Image (tube, rainbow, N blue to C red; front, side, top):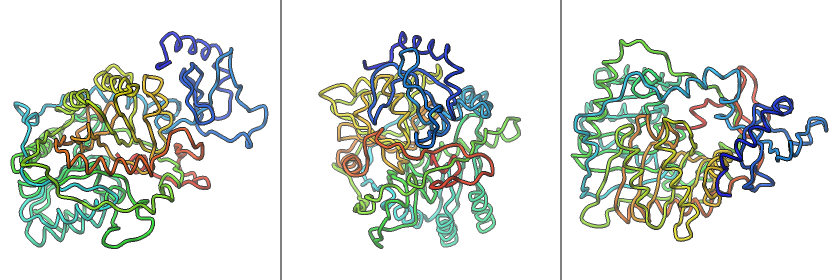
Length: 523
């Protein structure tokens, strides 16, 4: 059984409906739905009742009368820890937030790109492309890029919360009277607000920041999420990672070796590209976002919903101890031949169309590494669902190699993908993944900021590049391969503490810490 059929869904749902009172009487129960169960660390391809709980307790902490039955009306019952997204969906106290999420796609201010969609162009890059990965050398590459600025810096960023990056920016501006323009997501934390106030105070007229409002009544309903910086109209840095301590940790494990360095930051992919035409194109879109935001400033509109804090297991933050022994990967300037074809991607402009065509054109293999891949059956997400359905078919082909690494805590997301047609054997999970990258056929690579959810794939503002160069692709393929072999593990193997929504003002349980939603998911 490759998919959970509609017949089986309806049959199991009828059993759930008849026994709802019983199911919700089980300790910490939030809700139930049909699905494939996970039993003793293995996914079973049979129809079952998936009972989601707010906190899954070990049997030793339950009284016998609180044990969940093994089956209901002959249908297997699987008790599963609800991940934070599922907790929002099923928790009655968070119903308003769930409604905001569900209606975010219906933006009342339609997004309009630039005339003639110049983002659809392709570019021949003749100069070597600097490739790097985090946490290995992400900050070192970004720092050197910033220090090389002489005249202008145009930045589009989701999260700017690393004070050492702002300090470097201040020094660069002072040294050369650099003019900095920044567009920034409006989900600003206190740390980011302090940094922005300090930059404005220290740099005055040389610093101009615009906060891009995001809500269901705005152009970008969920997030302003790119990670791009254009230097002197001719060179740009593009990444999966924010200007945050998690994405650009202040470490140099090559220049200053230290134990445990891998646990200090996220897995990220970065490139620095020198090309006047492509750099100016990204500048045009950043300026376009700024103008549109300024014109919308006086419009009425609701605020984006605030997500709750989480209690997060320390293990999710520290990563596996074995990672400390890994050798850091050095940056490389790479170009295989005389030039490389590069195709820029922007959401919501051309990403969904271009990336779907590119993935469907794969002949031999796809390696994907994402924070998360959230299957969606919402009508407005049909293009995203259709691509996932096609990738699911590839997962069963004997003559095609598909490998997918997602962040830890993704067991339920993988289970949902499996019951919608994926072979679960193609998945592994890895702690501290914030990447959004793909290697196709070992010869082309995607470096991007687009998460794989409905909003991330279709509606947020995000940026990426498809680079058609074998050596560039092999640089990132080598990093992926090492992650797959030594850092990632099969899903469903562990059942320890899981991230849960944190009650207001409550202290964290033993072995957990309080963390904001955005810090945990990284975005």
